[in-house]
Length: 161
Image (cartoon, rainbow, N blue to C red):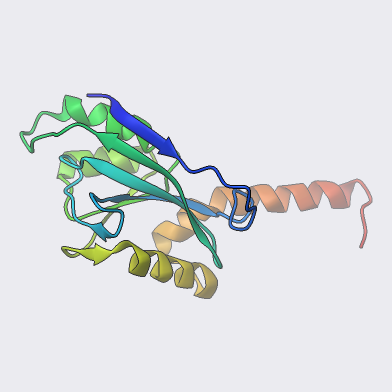
């Protein structure tokens, strides 16, 4: 089953934009306020760009109604839609789906029923400021190493402050 609707947020405000977003994370939600869906039967995901000081809603992905019936073919569209995300927060996720997410570099994060998206975003931002957990450090490592490679190249070219 494919994405029924993809709503991208367009803003003229550049704060919290892609340059500041270290992570892209998704939340399985029906109301954009709470994580209230199982990964396999999630009808929608809210995708945020998250940096240490700002988080911004980037898009909402909507899917048709799906049952928790063990048919994993229906998950292919979700896996494709979530590529590039560092994590997906949901109430539950099956072991097979969890393995597939991890193979795509997407960390499944199980949260308690009705966990608030705003609280989870604040917690993730605090983690980015104070020192990331293992999965967050792994998710931001490619960006950090790319930045370091850029500065090393500048220094090799004779760049000084």
